[in-house]
Image (cartoon, rainbow, N blue to C red; front, side):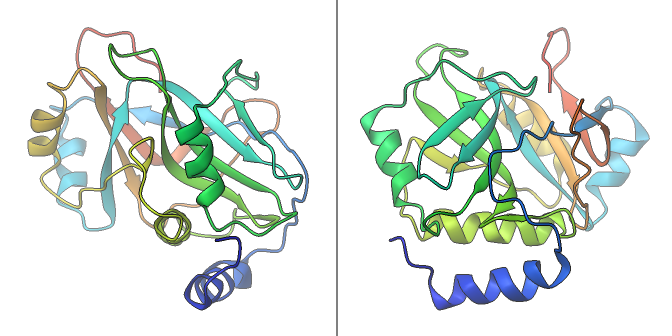
Amino acid sequence: MGKLTDFYRAELQEQAFASVGVKCDKFTYFYPEKPGLIHIDQPLFTSLSMNPAWVAEPKYNGSRLELHRLPSGNWEYWNRHGEKFSFSPSDELTAALAAMPLEPEKYYLFDGELRHNKTKGIRQKIVLYDVFVCANRLLTGVTFKDRHDILLALMHRGGFYNCLSHAPQYSHNFRQMFDELTPNPEIEGLVIKRLDGKLSLGRTRAVNSNWMFKVRKPNNSYHF
């Protein structure tokens, strides 16, 4: 499992590393970008839904997670405010993370959601949205589409676990997906992302994103 497949190596080198020049080989905290807030009845929401350059993903009711895999092989769990979680993963979640085909002695940073004790009955689960650092390379020059392909390659080659998943994507009918998904108490809304969006990570604070928007259920105090 620890050895990269030929497919994954080609994807990583051809689509990502060719445009990435920044090395990141040890723990570094990056604040994730803040999506802009829009309302479901705004014309912008409708226009994004009709634009093939954008996709929508469900926003889970959890704690925003910056998931670090250190070169030592240890995993660390940090929130969006630069604070370390006091979280001990279950045996199943530990096995799922260990099954990902990550290169040994390399640093990885994933963006996701810790689905644990925020919704009744939901514990010890992680959903991943993005990858910021892959095998010591900071992916700031890589589009969201290519970063997502890298994430899928890593996760699918690690097998399928109920406790570790990636967010599904929807390429159209955002209003229909919003209406179908949000009755689930664990789904707070949608995050809409431009496929060619590139990272703008903060070192001292979160920056406002120019390639992500969020739309959420009304009358709730969610924070994305």
